[in-house]
Image (cartoon, rainbow, N blue to C red; front, side, top):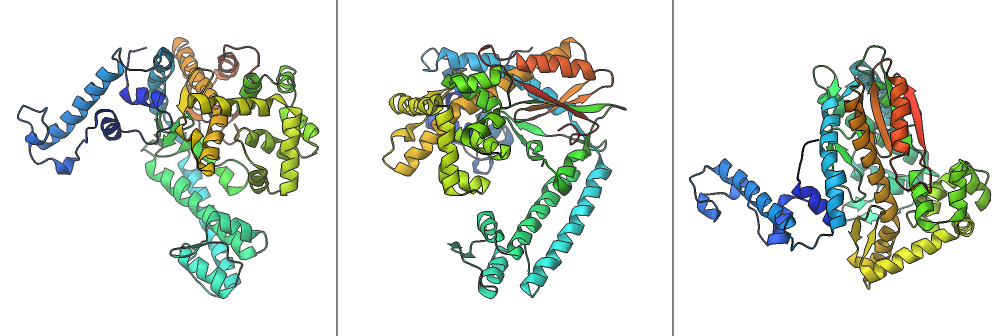
Length: 484
């Protein structure tokens, strides 16, 4: 693997809480130097380090090169207070991942153009039906895409309960419509109209516009954007392609294999964040569930006193985020009393988990940072803020960061090893997508077994601590929907 260095990734490791890192912002913070825009360049004298005759475009580029070089010198200086551990993350994880991500992007993703158009036509028909239904319920036609007109119809003509008001009129946000949908059909149909309209514009028309002449889509993965440690995908965002039933779920049917008689195989880490929580908290009940390969959600349902596995699954997920009874009740539409009962039941059943979170918050208050299993740090200056709302938000970040970032790092390490395996064995199959805890492959016929067996083995054994087993689920089909 080639040798790289990336000043942006160094900054991302050192300052993972900073959103939208850019050379301009980094230069201003590190060097107190304000980089100028292209339009601001009038002559070369504006940049005191340029002493040769350059045109406007060259001066603009020169400044980027110069500041990147200065940043590199500072980052690699022995006086820079960056822990060796952080440097090793850059060397062993983030830099090797550059080549892997580039390869995934160049592998592209094959799309069935006709299938996308077919789904688009279906959505257009559904949108027209919903529009007529909304107009009939309102008693007159209006622009459903206009928040102002929607607010006037709902709150001035139909006299629905008013929830919030903004500077420009009544709020018709998703939150407001969700509340109104519990009692009023027109609100639920407007919500569905918005949902289908977004699906059509973003995932049908948007992707169709981006397809090349061979019906491949070329996404870009961003390595230094999220505050969760995960990769993000843009143009198009393949990580947000809907799942589930109905017309939304059909969109994944359009993602197919490029190979004749090929298949799509997805390998997905199962309950990885709860497994990491079990390891880091040392809770015996959690550890024993995973060691015995039991159903985590079913066991939690039993512990908290519900027969609904979906509720237990939501509790297992949201507790990691430090959710309150109020928040849980809103997220899964249950009463506050039940939400409190379930959270209390979780904490009582896995009694070392609340102690673990309390210790994390206390340590963050002393050290100003939290740390992952791979020694990434997240600095949280707001952890001692006098404002209770700001402080509580920092505490929730402190609770979640060690688990979420460790989970993100596990799949990054897996991607590096899987890419090396494919290259070493000269497979024709291609890794084409990374979606949260899932790796998606476009698989050449007769290579299905090796992808399913060997990639699963790599992913499950990537984590050096064997206290807790990692589990990978495998899904296969002729398209992405069948594979998940």
